[in-house]
Amino acid sequence: MEEVAQVVRRRPDAAENPGRLLRRSFFHPPPERVAPRLLGKLLVHSTRAGVLAGRIVEVEAYLGPHNEQPDPAAHSHRGPTPRNRVIFETAGHAYVYAIYGRYYCMNVTCEPEGQAGCVLVRALEPVLGVAQMARNRGLAIHAPLRGIASGPSRLCQALGLTRTRHNGLDLTDPSSPLQLRDDGFAVTVALVTTRIGIRHAVELPLRFALPGHGCVSGRKSLTGKCVRIG
DNA sequence: CTGTGGATTTGCT
DNA sequence: GCAAATCCACAGG
Image (tube, rainbow, N blue to C red; front, side, top):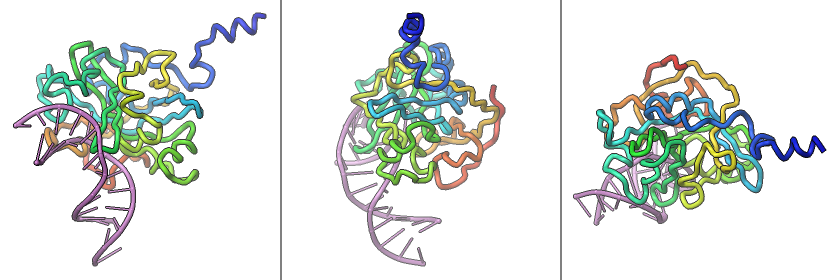
């Protein structure tokens, strides 16, 4: 009797999902502050086939148009459109967009409503459901971890994220199929470099990665400085 | 290992 | 019409 009540009272996400759900306030600072703090956190997708999760090892910040520092590389730079409107709304939501016709990229929205900063998630270390993630990518079950979710569109493919199903989801909702969680993995140092794959504002140091981590995207080792983060 | 081109959504000129 | 926050197949060394 008492056991049943405990089970009912338990949060639906608590049993199978690792760590603690990030709160809304985590996402209220500007993207250049949220981005390094997302390193080491878990991006968790609960699917019918099971829980897929990866540890964030690489991110990029994109600044909203209200910012003093202009960021013409950001989708929100010219104001809201049907595609980018979730960036202008409540923080802690997923902004998923289609790129080059065939792929998707996933961002985390930041800042209070009306301010349109966001963080692009660029690479994950697969943690849960690794075999299914490899399968989603068309790779062998025992493929090397570094090839499974290293790249913004690769990680969407590995986790099964699409614009129609996941754009606008609340990442802080206990009942959401897509969440950001903290399992206690401590990150004290971040590598800071310029962003990858953009044509504008190429000089801004807004890319953050776990130094030396094998799952960070990119062939070359980009030059950058290491910074302590708290 | 490096370089090149194709796939084909979305938004701006 | 074309460029974009990409990835992959394939060619050549």
